[in-house]
Image (cartoon, rainbow, N blue to C red; front, side):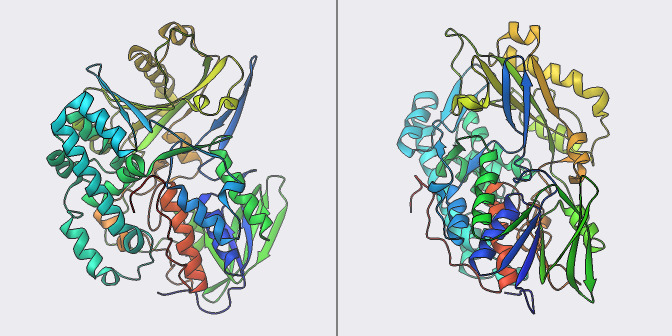
Amino acid sequence: MRHVPGRTDHVVVVGAGLAGLSTALHLLGAGRRVTLVERDAFPGGRAGRADVTDAHGTYLLDTGPTVLTMPDLLEEAFAAAGTRMADRLDLVRLDPAYRAEFADGSAISVHTDAAAMEQEVRDVCGPDSAAGYRRLREWLTALYRTEIDGFIGGNADSPLSLLGPDLARLAALGGFGRLGPRIAKLLPDERLRRIFSFQSLYAGVAPADALGAYGVIAYMDTVAGVYFPRGGMRALGDALAGAAVDAGAELLLGRTVTGLERSGDRVTAVRHTGSDGTEGRVACDAVVLTAELPAAYDLLGGAPRRPVPLRWSPSAVVVQAGLPEPGPDAPSRHHHTISFGAAWERTFREIVDDGRLMSDPSLLVTRPGLTEPGVAPAGRELVSVLAPCPNTAVSDIDWDAVGPAYVEELLGVVADRGLLDPHVVAAGPSWTRTWTPATWAAQGMGAGTPFSLAHTLAQTGPFRPRNLVSGVENAVLAGCGTTPGVGIPPVLISGRLAAERVTGTPAPVSSFAPVGAPR
């Protein structure tokens, strides 16, 4: 494994998002001195926060991911710095992980317990689908076991470094075939095919086009389990940052990195500016950049050449609203509800290829207050609606003009599908907050997407932008734009991989198996 040569005693980590915090904890555990520099006033990065106060009180909004899987990777990061996750985070396992609702009025609760899910499938879809689910679960588990250490959890210096028995096993499992057709062979019910393949959109690719290897994302959701931290998703950044500071890290918040000082091909210091205009400088022996990929390359003096241009994932519109808490006669509510429209393959063509809004949207509706009541005032609820949409590279939608009408349309669709009281929607929420591709772009995210680079074959594994930087011998990348990719589990792993590049010593392979997962 290639690593940073020379002295690496003091490392500056640019960005205190989940990747940067994971990097810091693993570096601290390896005996390095660490300084974290973060532009926001709080840690967490994409797992951000915003508080809204109305006449009823204060709502605690999570502005990033709402789905937490693979908490063993959090445990691994905490353990690197000599602390325990249980002492810093209180995680609630969600059951069901999701509630999937369909245009024909049917619904399927997605349980991660094998027996409970098999029974759910049998009851709703029949015995053939139940048998298919069992076979699918075995396949997803085999994919995970084959991929997690060598392909996802290891540093690769070149494609040749992946050659070996695991590559042969992955090929035999169908990892280089297409995900959608593979799942269709196992599951006769089209509703189940959606439940176990929609996750590929997290990787920026339609199920029909995604590599079978990305079934591992469905494993994380539907086998390993979905969790929610008490206090909201913001608790992740607070807990990891607290552990880093307690282990000796210096955390500089509200400081934007403005430049890197170099001597030859080594970075010698990081310059930063506060919101009040004060300037600062931190000398360093190495630097780990977890900023958005375009911003990181700008700091380094330019992006490396690639044989094909980078392709970005689809984006999303997220609407959050403060609403009256439904009465006792309201339909049952769930932490996560996936509301599928009648359309499916057309939906992916519209947002991935055509650059158009979904004509029959599939949506993720999240009600965090069902698990953590403290996120909304008494008698109120916080509702979040996520709608996938085109990124700014494939669409020229004027979001300032289109956004308000689209928000109204989305809330109307959710009400029409019985997930919100239509009278409340007609009267209007007490407030709404909206994030669009224009919002993400203003935050520096490439092509206006919070999901970074798509996981096409040319941007997967060793073909993804590398975490070592050509021409700068002591700079390393971490985060969703580099290896292994997008999502909370991959960015936590990316932090460990970046730390290994600095120290030159791979961390011990984790013995953790996700809670509830077969060993």
